[in-house]
Image (cartoon, rainbow, N blue to C red; front, side, top):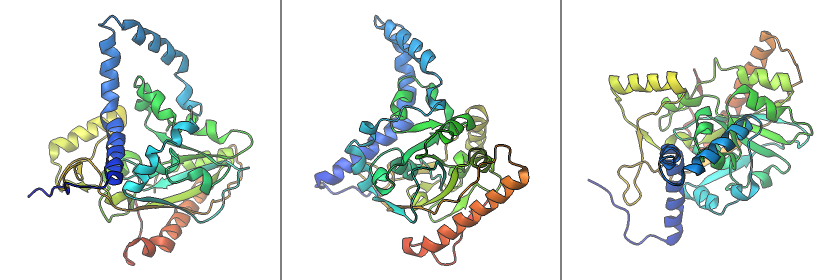
Length: 333
């Protein structure tokens, strides 16, 4: 049986649903549409728009690897408040971030669509700049997005940059401090492990972020977003062919798609809308990292182990407040 939404819903909730639908459309549907429009224009009398954009893309191709094009006006659009209130999403500070330092923040978990990391670090929906004054936040995402015409220019406005180490290094090496770059360290592999109530993190063998932090003397900040894994349900058995397709997609372009479902716009039984469940993003105390231009593997391993310990402590300290069972702990894989 399909459970339909009530006929009369407050306008506020309708607006929240519309904004989240817009966001999902942007990241799941808009990229291929942009490619089709770009190619399609070449066969119309407006072909010169595509030619002009190709020139622009050539001149601007390195921007996602050089800090992007963060726009405060876009980050402060009122629509992000509606997106934050849909769930709702809360940002919790446990320690100050010194604006004279640069930070590399590990964001956990990845979740299906990284809703928590985007809302907190790429918008002012939760008031990041007010909670952490003097800190400019960025978030990494897959490189393929930055080769999609028109779409790339839109997503850079919020502070999205390439996930390549050169991109992260560019931000961490900025003089004067006050820069934070967030990385969903588990990536798409962690997204495949996302399950409601589960807390499996792909982190044990991912040490590149620790090396970058040492090379640039950037403090490490553990961030855990309680509730991010509960926004979607997953198909129990995705089948051989889907697993094969997902593996091929990951090997070719570094992107894969878990089989997931949530609710719809006018009904609650199925669809691609996330469930209205709370997300609480807790920002931990920064780990001070000395600048070591050429860190040894031992130094990287030691910092990596400390990071995992601090992340576990952050999770254990706050889990009971956010309805995580006492006997549940982080699993590193």
